[in-house]
Image (cartoon, rainbow, N blue to C red):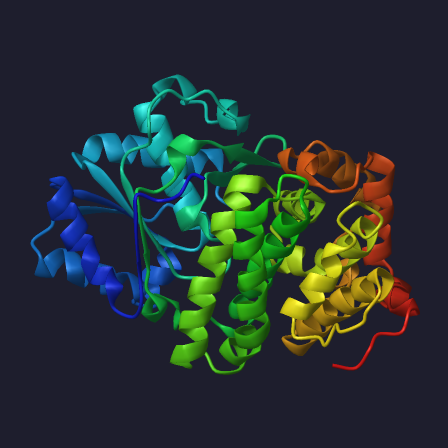
Length: 397
């Protein structure tokens, strides 16, 4: 398995930036974050560490939600001009993904167009050493070999998979997550749940990844709503910060499925937040994937979600798992239909083509097609589809 060289967890662990920088002999940080984190003074918590320990830094904040090729290329130019020798990335998936792209291109200039990084790129050198500090509990970008960049010209999300891009150090400090809104907490938490469920049922799953994902599902089921209801709850925040990292340890090494394939075009076409897209699509795709060799695993998903599964058949387990996911999603205000997030029905065919060609499609437990994916989009678009999965009674918990 490919994991970080070093990881730190717990309130206040951002202080280890200085420890790791000194241990590795680094002299100047290239600090990648976004303008919102500067505005809400979350970035100040990291700057305080720099200043207290006399670590020079260059701030780069040309980062947007759903980052683009231009963001990465601007970052590469800024890094080269900065004289920095390591990167510190603070943020959600967008900031950390931007930093991954910058770090890879700086050390692998043959990929300066960024487009050639899509899929599994044959880079030769590790990225610039990066310390990743997540501010959301969902993407697990700090522990994965994946990053996503938008090609603005064709409105396409490029999924890049490269063992050379994994951050050297992950610093998971829940105090950096307290500023998340209820909506962002909900969306990123459901993103983490999607990671856990998709990688649990992918054909590449195995004993160790299953262990990670079931534990992540269990922790998210217990703590996500509490984190949404009270963003200052230290127990819920810390548990979610750990759960999303645990999920990332698994999915980064075994892959995902068509929830992500279908979510990526929504981000590219409409700038839909990735967590919202995943959360909305997850129950529909779970129902579709129940007709696959992964079906017996749904009972274990339901159990991890807190359902009493004693004596359940496979069919009952499928319904219980999907119902439990839908119940959690509804309880934290996640939209349930594509039309609620301004998706246009006339776009669904092109979205399906893009989704089918996404790198995540190969990890789906059920072979699929453009036609099947388009049908799923239509189902998620229409109001009546929301009740489709409830046709078989589910046992009370």
